[in-house]
Structures are given as C-alpha cells and as structure tokens.
Image (cartoon, rainbow, N blue to C red):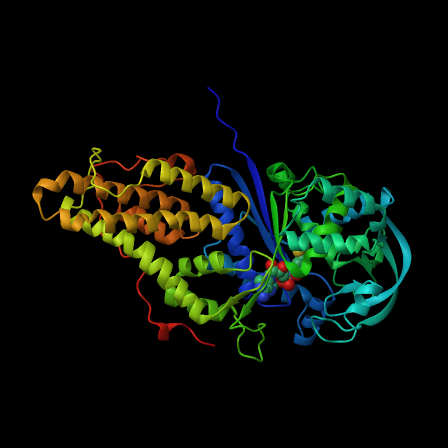
Length: 528
Ligand code: MSP
C-alpha cells in the first residue's frame, strides 16, 4: 500500500507596505486567497498560502523620520497590524514574510549577485521620470500620457538622474512575447492581459534596480552605497519565503517544493511589476514561472474612490464594526461574492452589503437550514430519517444534481472564480427551497400514513444542504462549523471530494435546530 501524494499548490498575496495601515483592499486580497487556499486544502491538496509585509524603501524611511522613530520601529509596529488582520478575519496563511527578516535579506543579495554574475544586472546611468510617492519610474510615453503628474498622488513627476544597477529587461522582449503566446492564462483576467501585451509592444527598457539617495533597504552586494530597489526586494519575497535563494536554509528544506506558485493574486495597480518584470527576473534566474498572475480590480466605496477626506474610507475599524454586526463569515461572503475579481471595480456600499447578507445568508442558507432542521425536529424527533426511495414529486434527481453542482463549484474555484463557485453551491440550497415548496412535507405530515415520504423528502433536503455546506465551508468556516455541530456532521477535513458524494449523511444522526444568520435591520449597518 502506498499513500497518494498530495498535489502541491501555492497562492500568494502582494506583500503590503508598512507605511500604510491595513484597509479593505488588503483584507480583500488576503481573504480571497484564504477562500481558495481552504477550498484546495479541503480537496486534499498540500497548500502553501503566503502573505507578508514590504518594509523597505524611501517612503518608510520618510514616514519614520516624520514620526521620529526608526524605520525598523515603524515597520515592526505596522507589520504587527497586518499580522493582526489574519486573526480578525479568519485567514489561514501558512507563512508571513517580512522583508526586513535577515533570512529574506541575505537571499535577496544572493539572488542579485547571481544576476550580476550572469550579466542580467549591470552598472549604468539612468535618467527618467520618477514618481516619488510610488517609487516608480515612468517611460516617456507613459509620463506624457499622465501629463507628467502622478495619477496616484497628483504630484508632478520628477526628472531624475542616477548611477544605478540595471536589470536587463530589454533582453527579455522576445522571450516574454513568446511566453504570453504560449501561456495565455498567465495573466488574468483577459482585459489585464491585453493591457500588458499593449505595453509590451511599445518595447522594453532596462530597469534600474538600485537607489543611492536613501539608505533604508538591502545593500547591493559589494556596492554598499546602493540599496536594492524596493520593488525588486519585494518581488523576491515570493521565492525567498520558500528558500529558493539559499538551498542550505530551513526555508528551502521545508518549502521549496511549493514553487512555482499556482496563482499570485495582486491588485491591478501593480500589474506591470508582476506580469513583466517578475517573469523576466524568474527567467533570468532559470526558475519556473507561476501558473497565473491574477490582477483583481478595486473596491470603491459608496460609488466613489475611497478617501479619508470624503469619509468613505473603509479602514480596519470600519471592517471591525461590520464583523461585530454581521459576523466574520458575512464579511468574507460579501468580499468573495461581490468583490472586484473581474476587470471592473466593485462598490462596497452599506445597502449592497445588507442586501447580500439578507438575501443569501439569512433568507436562503439560514432559512433553509433552519426550516429543514425544524421539520426534522417536529416530524422525525430530531433524528435524520432514512431515504427509502419513495418520494412524492419534486422531480429532482438529487445525486446527479448535486454531483453536477459540486463539479461546477470545484471547476470555478480552479479558475479562481470565487463568485461562480459559491453560486454553484448556493444553487443547491435554492433547489432545496423549491423542493420543499413543491413537495410540501409540512402538509403531508398531517397524515401519519405519509411518514415515510416525509422522511424521504427531509433526508434529501438535509443531505443536499450538507453537501452545499461542504462547498461553502471555505468562505463560511464559522457558520458551517456551527451547522456541523448542530447536525453532528463531524469534520470533512481534507476529504471534500468524498464528503460531497450523495448519501454520506447517516440516518439516525441527531439533527438539532440551527439559526445560522440572525436578521439584521438596515439601520444597524455601520455607517462612516
Ligand atoms: N508593497 C507593494 C506590493 C509588493 S508585492 C511584491 C504594494 N503594497 S500595498 O500595501 O499598496 O498593497 C497593494 C495591494 O493591496 C493591491 O495590490 C491590492 O491587492 C490591495 N489593495 C489596495 N487597495 C485596494 C482597493 N481599493 N481595492 C482592492 N484591493 C486593493 O503595492
């Protein structure tokens, strides 16, 4: 006998800047990665879910100076805030990398040294348009397009000259073009891929990868006046966390098998770094490329760009209030089903949150589970009936119907279509509602002669709901946990495929009443 080896899967979030405090954007990206990671673990895969903080660079140095603290102290404080959100929102990352960790720093130096030795990094002089707020250079075309003003901060771009180490990105033009043709799913969604292809056609220039005008960063090997550009430092986190820069490290021993990442999730504003510079760096190092770079769009708030002055900024405090009012699962559900996973931005509005919560969680999943368990309480003494086959009407081939929904939910999750996966699971719940209305067990139960039929109907309801719950557990871990407890279902563990097969629910199991999602009045939704 030999054990089946679990498939390795790796998912990453961007690493977050420590000069900002966490807000909905960070919670969103990390949450959708968490839903995917949980689902894949459920399927029995060996998943590595990585997140962390990006702690070097001029902005951190400046913010620290303004506050009168050292950059390291600022980084420590804010990185801790980011780690705190993992607990607050039930996020199950396997590692949290910090770029000030010496284990990251020494690997970054080793990786840069390898690029210097291969000639992919060289010393040269650079002049260009610089966005100081973003620590990013613009090409002439892009600078002209934005009228020499930062689209992010609104401040003028600066003309800057530097002696720098460069990454020979221009040498990767052909290889990148070939890559995008061969691996069309590398950059998603399609709209983002087209953007990248368009910009790629303008031609690639070498990119400076060192800075000399500040000190808060990793020194370039053998050139201590230069610190490594924060973006290069940051991109490398994805492989340093897995020890790929030091084969003698513990991280390598424990984690190297997780590279290449299955999916790297980012926001659309950092697409270029991840879709072009990152693959080129990996090619230069001779490392395999990720399966997919998925760039989601942005949350706006109440129809407008989030801003502190407009008072529509969804910060951690606001999210906490949502969690207090609706529970963590409700927030996760809203983010995963209503979020900007496609090419367009999504609106976080109080009304939409309330509507989604009430329609899907209270009126559908909550109501259907409570209705079913109440009937089993009333007509079957709280014990799961057996399905003996006879069943009046309803017209649903439950084993086939649920198997198709399970397959659809799994396939959607594979495509990182979280909303699609959740919709497939919810369609089972909706079908149970229809089935109850059509078969009317509450009417049949009035005549004791119908006891068997009623039992058969209720078994099918409970079993279908159990399967839907298994599929929803990745997004609703607490509520499904509550259901498991009330219905004595045990734990699906990493046997999701098996657990979703029809007929696993054992007759005789004690089914207690559940109320998963309390109704919340519209007035109780937190306001800014
Ligand atoms: N440190 C860089 C990333 C380096 S990765 C090698 C960075 N950090 S960040 O703190 O600004 O985080 C950016 C990420 O936060 C975005 O890519 C996105 O995942 C998330 N979001 C920030 N604001 C957002 C919204 N308004 N909406 C959705 N997500 C956004 O960039």
